[in-house]
Length: 464
Image (cartoon, rainbow, N blue to C red):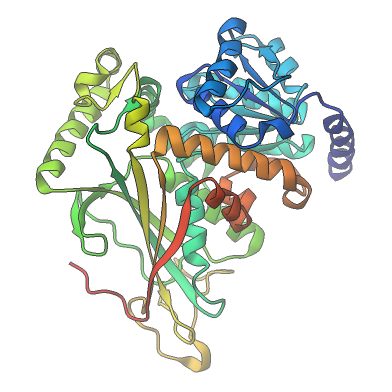
């Protein structure tokens, strides 16, 4: 099997070197895809051999003209249009065989994503996307990781706001602890800052959420079928909060964040524990709201959404009237350029752990294990019941869905283009942090994401 894999990698490597394009933006005429084309042009597309792709040639071709006008440059020369359709397997394979990498911007991914992944894996082509759908991400790893290893194809999902700031933000927070210290947990607190025009989202983003929530029981069954071993932990189990609480560390009411961050971060922790013998951290994600009134409105909208998404008739109702059921938050038109330009985000990370010479008691069976860091401190030091070291970090950037996401996707695509030999020993299905690690921070910061340390304390803050 190893010999077969090495032969496959050699053949695919020679084939990749002779391909027509460095990257193809698939779904370029979609709402987010258009912003991705903007970013390729802005980030040095003249140095790449690239193309745009989609179902309708005329519409996709017009996207390049429109993007150049928005960026304020002349239309790039030699940007071909590739006609491809997710429902036409031959066209997908033909597209994948012409390029080294595909940036897939077509959602919902549960409907249209697998055809692109399959074509890339069969062709030894690299694949990056911007999905925030946990079921799709985990299913692609289950189904295609082994084949991607054999063809030396690199598949990385969630390469946008979902979930690069969280995934790499956790690594960045962990990196603030010395090698002799032990990290127990990281909690993230996401906050959106809007201008007077407010914020908004496009219908496709809402559709992904509706379909994903409606199929959450399928995700539960899929995870049970995998029967993965429980990850070890350092220190006591991370307390799971209620429906909402006031978090003094960020000065806001917070609720559990329903996105893909927790799924992606856990997959990264499992990867690094298995491959690098690195102690995994416990993780929980929250989002901030300004007041108790907003907590009430959020719970009301979320409750109605949760109820309706359980039933096919309810999902149809949600998708027919997205603006009504989100109080104007999502629409077919999507946010305006002015709304995007006046919106930003930040995520605060609260990392807790143990200083050198101390270690948390993980509990029998749960925390002990290779790479967990569990055990007595140096010289038999007493084990503190709670972590005694806290690090607060922050990741911030422009509007998350349609400004930060294209910047992140293109920054990682260019990083992979430049550094593939150093990053990839063999193909496979990866999370962003498991493939790129902290070496990608410089590129992300050049793309207007900021990673910073806010506070380092030897004793944890008093909590509510």
